[in-house]
Image 1 (spheres, one colour):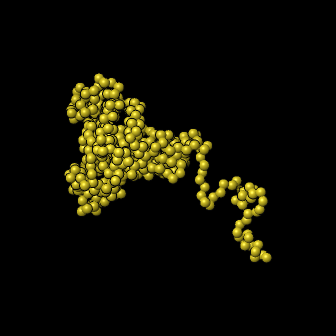
Image 2 (cartoon, one colour):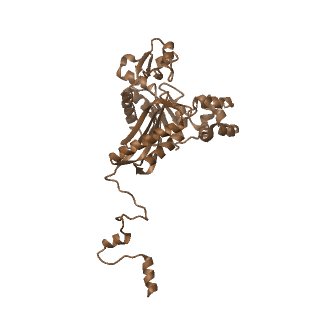
Image 3 (cartoon, helix red, strand yellow):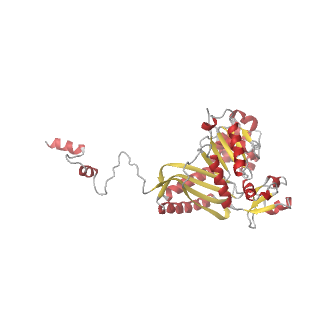
Length: 390
């Protein structure tokens, strides 16, 4: 049996989180937004969307479309609490959960889904239980890899469950406009369209491959593979809930990669100091990037051994950033987290075959001979030398 990946996406999360604590807002045209002069809509309820209001729209424009619009200020502390409950709920079904942002995740359900007579019963159970227990609604995409699962979850909202198999890609995916492809941003789509790449099928077409490589550079091959239905099915997850993190909301949005790396470097130094003060190191490093429209991605990797070193943390964070940053979107918030923590007091460094733990300025042989009650160890070269002398 091949991999089965769920992409679970909470519907209008911030708006529904507000409705959870104030039921009078239910079925009302509601948006969650910042209160600054440059505020934009973070999330619009489905009632507000009927007026044409959508995320990333300036509040002034949203009020013109819907004069009765209810504007609620962002409360990220509350949203993070709701998000934590969401992820705790999902982990009841599978430990293999990769958060993609505050309100969405990928879940490897390959093992657990085999226990169900009808595979979609698992998706239905998750969806309905989430609504009954937490008051949150979600859409679920079911596919053999991450990209197809993400595309599937977007096909039916709210409360949709959609399967997308590889043999259905040509029929269901390729006719869609290139602007609807996950990973193609608002600046990249017009460039592709200007050069005749109008649909996802055009991106998948081998005849356009060289053109796309010229247009997208290092991002070309991953995008082409996704369009053909052959994305990665590997998830990055951490079953340990212990972690340290450092993050910052920027005073103004940035769109320069070097400026973003400078922020990451400062965060890595702060995180390293925090880990050293708490006498811990970690193997799991993740980076969160929140864009100006409040969409957020979280990506992570696992090291072979734990670290608290700022250079190593930064290098991993920069690698994750370079692989996943959508260069046509301004950044509002950056964060780095260190997970799978090990206590420095309890940590035992694994020595290689060629290393021995001995005090400085003491030879390995001296250290070993001190522990022997009789006999004397020596290097083979010394033994050979003595034989030659005789």
